[in-house]
Length: 143
Image 1 (cartoon, helix red, strand yellow):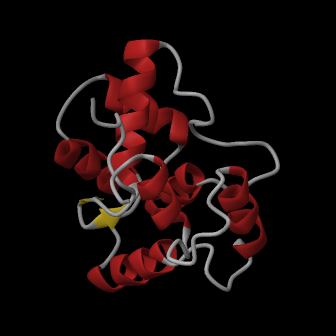
Image 2 (cartoon, rainbow, N blue to C red):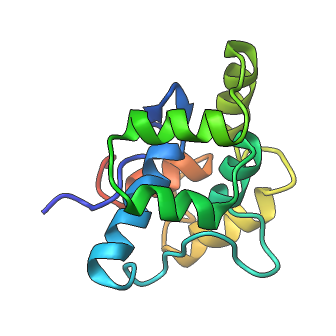
Image 3 (spheres, rainbow, N blue to C red):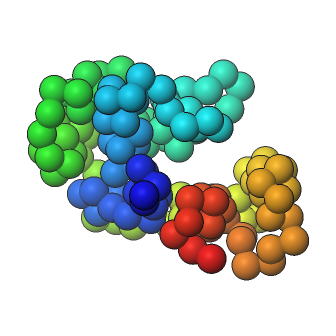
């Protein structure tokens, strides 16, 4: 069975991470919980990718969850985000995607990234340099 969440690199509306969040919301609604080690929404004391996407789009996470659970395609939910919050420009999306795809590499999240990498038993892997790499390796999309 394939891992139930898509790669954070996959885009919805051109935006990385959003599709993964929609996958997690749908999975939680269906299963009543997420796989061990995963979270949804906000996590006390930590900035999450879920939180960052919602702030970027100007939508409340709980409202996004409700809208997602009402059904519809990823694109329809993205349009709802743009109408409810804000529609990012192509340049804003490019900057967002660049920022998120490099998260953990020489930035404020580097220590947390390294800790998670070591906890996953992957501290020896020099090819895992950002959170997206770590997720893709842990979830079997990358060797």
